[in-house]
Image (cartoon, rainbow, N blue to C red; front, side, top):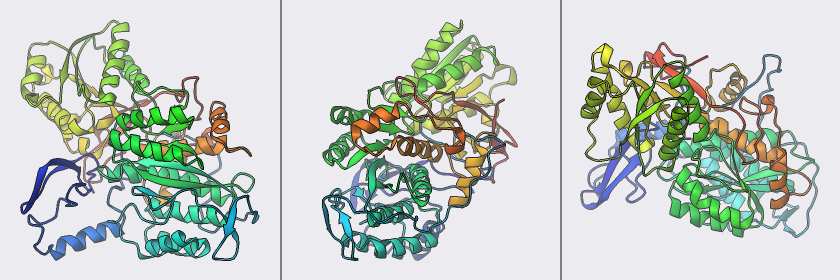
Amino acid sequence: MTDNADKQWKCTGYKDEPHSEMLVGWDDICPICCRDRNSPEYKHKPFPKIPVAIVSLLFVLGLGGYWLWPKNQTPEEPPVEEYTQNDSPPQPVSLSPPDVDDTSGEDTVNSPDGGSLQEPVMSVSEEGFSLGDRTLFPGIGNANRDRGSEEFGKGNYSEAVDLFRRGIEANRNDPEVLIYYNNALARRNQDYATFAVVVPIQGRQSSAQEMLRGVAQAQHEFNNAGGFNGKLIEIMIVDDGNDPERASQVARKIVENTSVVGVIGHNSSNASQAGLAVYENAGVPMISPTSTSTSLSSPVFFRTVPSDAAAGQTLANYASGSFSVRTAVILYNPNSAYSTSLKEAFEENFQSLGGRVVRSIDISDPGFEAKIEVSRVGLTAEAEAILLFPDTRFTSVALEVAQANHQLQEGERLKLLGGDALYSPTTLEAGASVNGLVLAVPWFSRSAESQQFSDRAEQQWGGLVNWRTAMSFDATQAFINALSQDTSRSQLLQQLENVRIPRGETSGSPLEFDSLGERQGEPILVEATRGGSVGPRTSEFGFEVID
């Protein structure tokens, strides 16, 4: 099975209702006209029956945006877990409700199922927001989930719990329904803290689901164990479409809802930057599991993924040390916060080690020709290595560079190193062209310290997970560990500064933040190699950790 998480298709609308060109995630629908890549050319012609059946089957099996490699893990956009051999393996996660006391809080209303419930934290019918009253993934069919959402919206939380449980049984790797199940438990329990998770459902649905799996697993394990002194957690799912303008809009709505005490997200660095300004003004703590840009900095900002500064330093050390490289060319997208900060971090560290960046080339330039640039560098011995720092929109161009490099004579080929945007099955499909490519990544499912969480996640979701899931799990764990009797935003922010989580409670490595909110630790170096342990079953190449 191959992964299409980083592929895109071009949509120009229906022939009878065209629109301007739009790049859309391979398994996603166009946000303008709602076409997918298998849709007919004309809007008003019947949709072919066979493709519909195939797509429906894929969603039922949970393959949309979720790929299982045992050679198997995904990574993606710029932006790891760990356990010791002496740690005892965790017990299987059950779907039975937690055994907690039925306490009532202040400001209650009568419940349709007999008890008292907290006032709803917001109008959950808000477009792009859901606590459980609606699905944000309408393309994934699940009748029991939809019936559960109806009951949740009415305040019938006991009925919603039962229906969401059935929805989980129908599609075990759908994180949305597991979150709604736990939200219904929290509402029925009446004592809970609410967090928002902001993900890019429109545009990068697979990335959104990967992030939600980590959040859902942490929430479920916590609630299933009875929470903190009986207090459970509720997760509000929010879609920002990976768009900075939309991210700013949803951030304002989140902070207006004083019941939301913390935010997990956003996905891209550009979206996180837009939301962060809003959260800082409101004093709302934010933990990003995937945004790596060094431009992200604030008293309310934390991240569980290593920053571009850490990745750039790790790559510079390896290039200068193990590769003995002294000259390099960088290919990057100057319009991407991720790509730019990774480029700057590598350049600064490489130069401090005595290296020299000969040129930095705009890989997003429409006039860029991979063969011409690679030949110029390789044949003239201008540099010894190429650093590939595309954002996910230009990973295909980076792979063209790798292919052009492979076509050079063996003595003329350059060393290839890159950022985690290239850490995907799509990269491995390039075969021998990427053999030897070294990447700095946040997490590796087959590393010794990640194995225990990886096994536990596989049991939960039915397949191996990727770094977004791992980092999102850790972000949720950070908030959980910061909970206290006082769940105010200010108290939570103060507690986050003192979080110390051992490896047995994270996705792998211990978790604590430095004074700038950065996770302490380093990225992992992996190499694309023939027979590597992590990759698509259909490829003879895979990624392997570099010791």
